[in-house]
Image 1 (cartoon, rainbow, N blue to C red):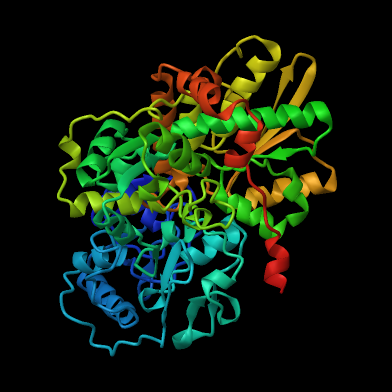
Image 2 (cartoon, helix red, strand yellow; image 1 turned 180 degrees about the horizontal axis):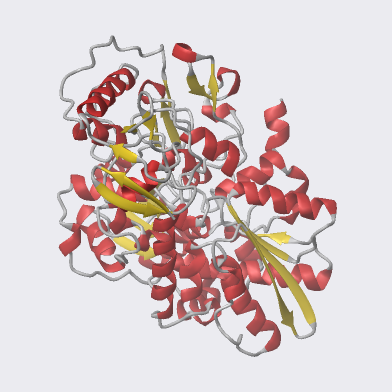
Length: 574
């Protein structure tokens, strides 16, 4: 252990720890901007400078190793003056006006400026670098006037997701973080995953706000239908200031009704439907010589990634739509017929953890109902803002219940929200359908957890099915390369674009691995409390097949619940 003194407090840290690590252990708060607990140390913003006895000048605490006997001052007059000067220089590249900024109230830059009591404008002239707002993407808005060149988005896009859409251009004063060749985001290989939104400390990269679309539909007296993704119930309360992992299912339902939604449905139901179709498709491929391995198709960012970078594997993708896009046509056909409402009078709004869902709902293929199946996608961030705008006291709301006929989802549907959840849910049903026996144990734990790539196998009455799970597109690339080279052979592969799966989605409150771990814990604890834990045992699923769909992979199911894919690699090349 290394012993040092920080602001008069003695603290011991392990070898390799930084001064910033030591300060946090001593409960001393040092402001940071470019630093992120899940990323490499960059030391570019310099706002974390401290004074170290015996060392010249000031040191960046995030990158300076702690050493034996070191004496550190984190708030001396010299340090405070330096931080204010640094902040003024940063603010000279960032407009002071915060009104209307999506990050207002939770902007890291605002918080640091407030901690330094900086109420006056910068002494330096504002340099807006002739930056324009890029809102061409259906998912993400870039406002480079607010960029402080911290490098977080570049690391996430290049090193974690390995898409490499964002990079610094030019040098020094003229540096900007931009897509290649001055392209708009919509014209790049961006897959809309929103992980850049998750790490941006300012309002330079934000979720595209579609709340006004929802208000507009309400003004048209539409029948407002909300469908809520599995992971939202463990993300929404956190976005509204509660502890990570807080489950808020009932309060969320009540809040949506107060906002103005007429029906609130559980997308866990559609996740169960996905398992029925996808599990049947997997068995059909195994038994009848279909293309293997079969890849899951629930994640739209992963689908766009495969279409863009690995079009040779499009036949490996399950033809099943995502749960959201299975739900869309059912709401405007089956539900509309049951309640005798014209589909054109329904506005279907999906509440998602995912920015890529905004892209998915606009795909040309997603109109099986004869209309755009999902009219608007709102992320957790957007729903949280709508709740705040409506003046709803979320913490003290009474518990509501989902509406039928889509009010019951199984535990298998709920665990779709975490990496490995789709695989586990599918195996619960496939195993029982093939063997006639319950999986023992019910929880297929080898596919759980945050290891980048997980492998497992299950014996289906003598046929050993090999499966794999990957999360984060950097890991997706690795597994695709292994499959393409013949070094890895699987029957079934689950891929989620976002690290951690949907609980780490780009539309949630800003993530760290510690927060995602709490969300995962909550989702599995909640799953065990549900009355039905296997998709095929959901009575509402049984009823919709009996009344409307017929059988999995049948004609009606194919019409409404299955899709096809596009070779985007060739489109980008043109």
